[in-house]
Length: 153
Image 1 (tube, rainbow, N blue to C red):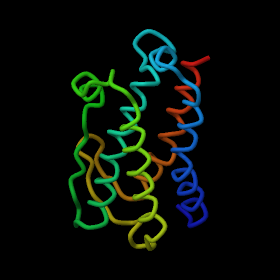
Image 2 (image 1 turned 180 degrees about the horizontal axis):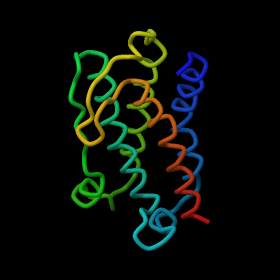
Image 3 (image 1 turned 90 degrees about the vertical axis):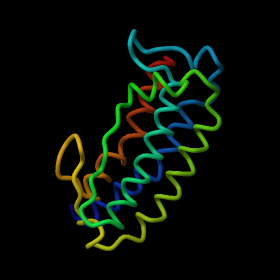
């Protein structure tokens, strides 16, 4: 990954909360509980997923930066949705998503070229480094913002 590509992905990552908040603008409880299709997550469930994912990803990048060759543990997002009461109000999860992302964004802007090359192993997918982390999480919120918009349309 070139420094320019990395900078673009960091900007996209930093913009993730804004696009989700815009996708949710004006949504009432009925809109938050609408599904794009049977079996898909509702906007409410997406927000809770984003909070859980963001808090998990914040720890992942920190472990990659601090530990030598960490094992990055995968998790079952569907089990989280089933067991962590994803029917609850979204305000606290939106705050958790926003704050975890903004705190992590500060780290991303300070990382050196060697920081971006730090390696670990993901328990589900194998070799994993900070650049792979960025590729995944730069687009994550944007993809879910699109999902929210589709459910609301």
